[in-house]
Image 1 (cartoon, one colour):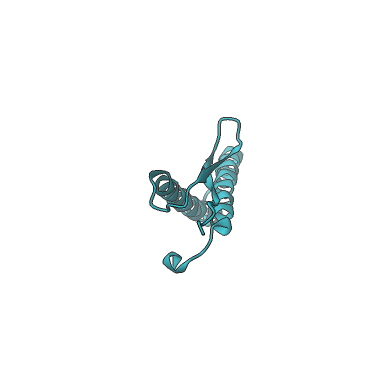
Image 2 (spheres, helix red, strand yellow):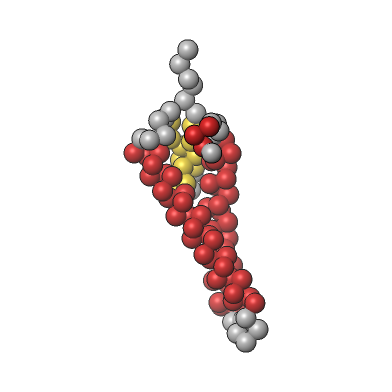
Length: 100
């Protein structure tokens, strides 16, 4: 019996903001590796942005400029969207021994 291919939610959206999916059972395909690398980059950027936001908010000597806070909020919202997409994608993929 052939394993059914699962659709993988990719870490980017299409031109109209619609989700993009990959249909493959090969985790080592070029597109799978590209998606893995982009996910890793998005998670790393989110982690770095969170650290920068925490430092900015903890620094009492810094006057919190409203424009800087607006930019920070926009960047955090975008990073959260990326992280949620990665979590959704990874949550829908089967977990096997190779994942540990």
